[in-house]
Image (cartoon, rainbow, N blue to C red; front, side, top):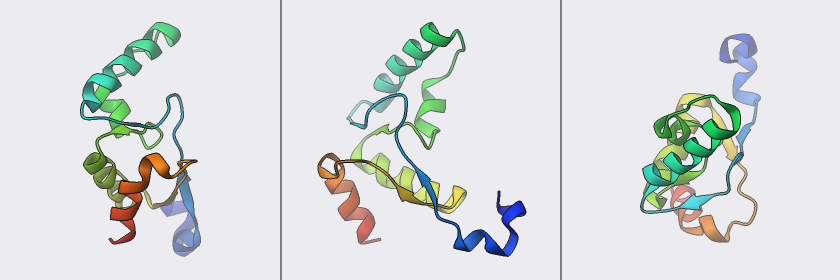
Length: 101
């Protein structure tokens, strides 16, 4: 996308939002992602690893620290500057930390 947009890329606002599963702030993100991966494989017949899900910009399963790191990485690597979470309450600690960054 960067290559196609060229010098217009900086003017784009790219966003991400949770899909497939709800936002999940947990101390056990790998275990939670494994459960989602198993359900997806059963439903679609396509295997996916928990690690792939955790890396996806549309799967929001992580610790609060993990979300801060993930959202910063999404901005740096993918240019995503808008993250849609719906009600901010459950992500308040993450939003506060990112706002200060």
